[in-house]
Image (cartoon, rainbow, N blue to C red; front, side, top):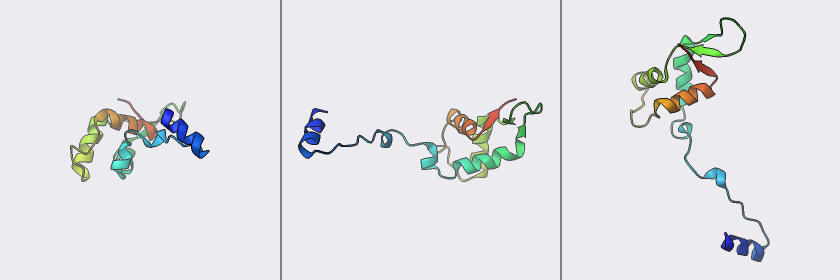
Length: 100
């Protein structure tokens, strides 16, 4: 940090830290078609809230089931797919709610 500050003082310009470029990349970075494939699996089984009190879309599938179908129906390897917890988060970020 001291070396960076000295360089900024001597050059007269500020150096950007680029913290957003560090860390682990999301699963979509490594598997670009993952979200589209998840949608293809979930769409036929999903339904809206029967009481129409919310705009949520529910699906009876579990994240483990989605993971199994990704392995069977698409060309994914077991080692390349994220775990069920990560898939559950991706499904929720797509706007689906996993319910029994």
